[in-house]
View (cartoon, helix red, strand yellow):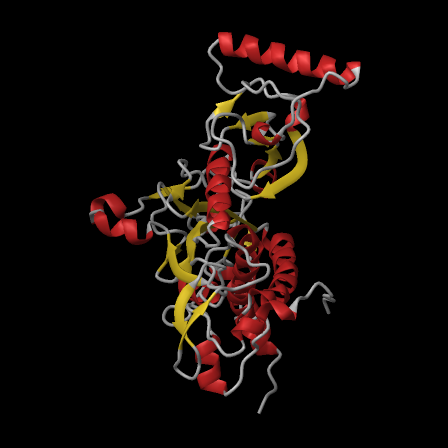
Length: 416
């Protein structure tokens, strides 16, 4: 049970008789004859808290049983995309590199008066001196000569630093350019968890979201997920293919509109000779290699995204989820009431302009639930116990082990 007293049902009064454009209000009302006008009920992302709780348990079991690791991050927002195609990010990197500290806007700062203390005057002189020195050396970032006593503006400044990544001790302009010589007094205690591990892209995304929020609008984006150390052999041949189950799970998350695995739609532009993933032998052999058992194979590339024929291949499972802009926005929209009368709707209250950072743990949780289900299904088969390999991964049992297990099962069957 999750207690929540931070609710404001009055924010939804305007929507009692108006189905929100892009929202499930209309379809729920037609299908069930009722709906949760305050917040959306089952169509709200609030319901995903149960998924995250269950996913945490599934992920722990996968990690302890197979060493499986699941990491997600925000790879795109609006038209802004990460320049790197790295997939070896860790959760620590996503959390730390993907969190920016907001800097004070010099335009909101007040100048120092002659009656201020010597300490303040000293700070001002130091800042001014630093700015003059920086300007003469060609640095256009620290040009402010005012005492930092103001706050954070609604929109980020464009001519001075707007963000700081305290993990790397680097400051960024609103456009993602690196900025030096930023006064310590500009730092604030406000942080934005964008969950994009490329700090420069983080700055661009944060700037875009601040502009979108000022316009009382919303924007969508893409989340990339990688699942590492997934056992070979999970998934079924037809309707319950591993990627089909993942797609089913991801598209069940509110606001999701797309799913692709591996090369996805971009792979359609390649030829088979370019897209095929050649097999290569692993460096280590299984403990039963002397009994004629084959090596576990890897692939030189991973355009398939970790599955072959709907069954996990042992390579990293890499997929992406598209999330649409939030439906409830403060901008005026011409729409209709449930009775068919034209009306203008402007949503009030608290509504996120960009929900992707909040969706990252949801995607991780749903991936864990799917992989745990598929692993348990495979383990339920006679002789399908996973065995460790010399390379540190997992593989299906050998023929001899399967034979021994089947004999054991048959010996315990009740005789007719």
